[in-house]
Image (tube, rainbow, N blue to C red; front, side, top):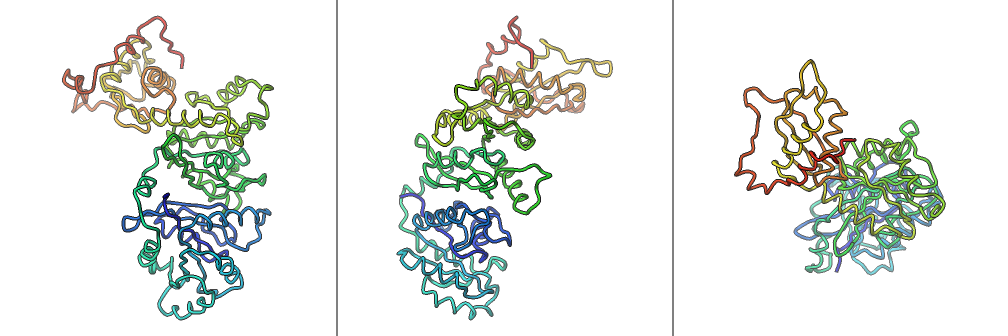
Amino acid sequence: MAIPRVVIVGRPNVGKSSIFNWLAGRRIAIVDDVAGVTRDRISTLVEHEERYFELVDTGGMGIEDVDNLTKEVEHQIAIAIDEADVLLFVVDTKTGLAPLDQEVAERLRKIEKPILLLANKTDHMGLDNATLEFHRLGRGWLMPVSVLQNRNKQDLLDEIVARLPPADDEECLAAATPRMKIAIVGRRNVGKSTFVNSLARAERMIVSEVPGTTRDSVDVHFDLDGHRFIAIDTPGLRRNKSIRTDLDWYGLHRAQRSIRRADVSLLFFDCMESISKVDKQLAHYIEQQYKPCIFVINKWDKVAGQVPTERWVRYLREHFPTMAYAPIAFITGQTGKNMKALLNHAQMLFKQAAARASTATVNKLVQAALVRQQPPMFAGKRPKIYFASQVATCPPTIITMCNNPQGFPPSYQRYLLGVMRDHLPFGEVPIKLYLQKRDSHTGLGPTINSDQQAEEGEVEQDEVEQLHSPDFDTDT
């Protein structure tokens, strides 16, 4: 069996998303006084007493969506209830029993699944008597809880675990850490949610022509070739000057957080639209975070045979010159065309970001690059690099010990990075380069002896020798 699902349901503004964040132990879902903020199913993995379950937040039942997406929101709720193993029916102690609570209870009356009736906002024991009126709903085991006062959280988790179906080995396997997290980012209406639905092979996200349909970052688990992955669907972004509401602000910061969480980012473009300032802002943020990135041209079926791919490649390279290492993919998210190749390439970038090069290889490569093209004179002296080594992965991080870091202008640093991408296993991912001044008290810093070379593996002499060949290209 798969991981058990615990689904939170209830009318709008009873604190469903607050309870979701509370049980998850971190802020995931947007919490706002505006009714109907949550539209898609938002889920996260929770562990308690060595049992795993997927906690799912849903939209408010019975609300009329401002963008006429009520039918789609209700459909997402229906799917969540159908897939649930345990239901958390949330009501509000402070506002008391409401007609919409009765409607929710009636909808759950035919559901033969364990239900916990959570009287939220019961901040102290003096309010416990006020919760008794919810017994009239006739659905669920009543529990007073309070997110604000952190009341009865452990008791609630115990009750949830007690109602989960028996565990098996497949549950532990399904709960294993995903191989890779992929952030799907882009401006509005470029087809991100359609792409995620194709990955999940289900109506996991609401798809609409209405701009801003997706309001929160949503983790969607999917399997590929026997491995588990997470696709993070993000809200479509607007220009900073167009951010006027709390929801726009939340969307921006959720998208940025998703980029930071992800192992690889897929930056989506609509092949029918020109590159915008939002696209450049997103690309810049991905670059700042040193995240592997693939430029994804979506809806390619609309122009296939009419526009050559080379034209879009040139167009992207002109607008994003500092990300010339990023590969480009042409897909049709609605039909799934080229999606398997895209995901395989994303896995390749993930492996590149985690790769290591031996200290001897990096050191000799940098020294050969210096011989091939010397840095310009600075303050009457020639800058020197004494030592270079990779010190971290994800992103690959190279540190150099030199006599004067300021003597290496950005153009020369780009030259060094180009050499590294050409001859080290980081060809399509960002590389972090540090230029550190040599400390006169410690000499040259770390040195390489023959024993270290033996431990780190043989130096890739063929790559170093290429630097000295006439065909070596120094153009960055």
